[in-house]
Length: 215
View 1 (cartoon, rainbow, N blue to C red):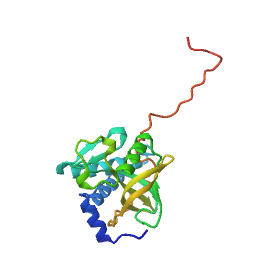
View 2 (cartoon, one colour; view 1 turned 90 degrees about the horizontal axis):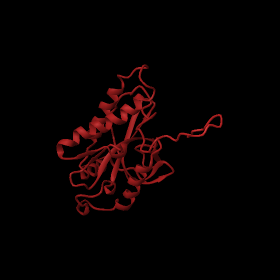
View 3 (tube, rainbow, N blue to C red; view 1 turned 30 degrees about the vertical axis):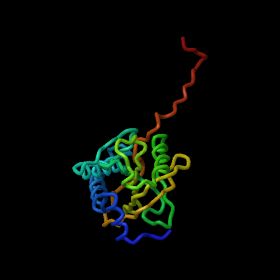
View 4 (cartoon, rainbow, N blue to C red; view 1 turned 45 degrees about the vertical axis):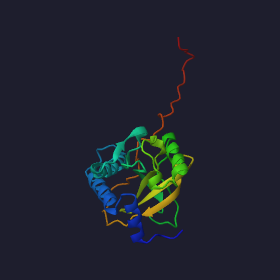
């Protein structure tokens, strides 16, 4: 797989009504926000805040253009006015921005993301004109802004997932590298926890002690 020419990446983003500036500004503002965290914050605060704020700033930029917001199943998405596609931001690992390297989600995902990715695989080949208004939410192809912090540098790409193996998203229909200006060191690992997950909750094992039975 050859890396795309930066100009072609810009053109492809424009076809989706995105821009490099949109994602750069969202990531830059989120990085600034987490620098306000201290050691008195919860250990996972920086990673969770970076995920939430990146999605927030994308939403605030797209909302005036008629994009719709949803947080169903704890997946923060903005939906194109035509419902042709949506976008969400998650942390990732691997060769972010390098089409010759493999990439997968940093944190495990639950059944809601699995359904979304499966639908992507079915609908990924729809053209913009074939997209219908009033689709079920899980039927809207959802692009992922993948980001990674490594040695003080944040890298990112926009990719369309089509398959999960286990609980990790790791197969993509299309990947668009983003050439970003230096965002500065966020000062922490922003992938410690990037979302609350969409599982129904933690598994809890309850054991009765002393032979007591419920009355």
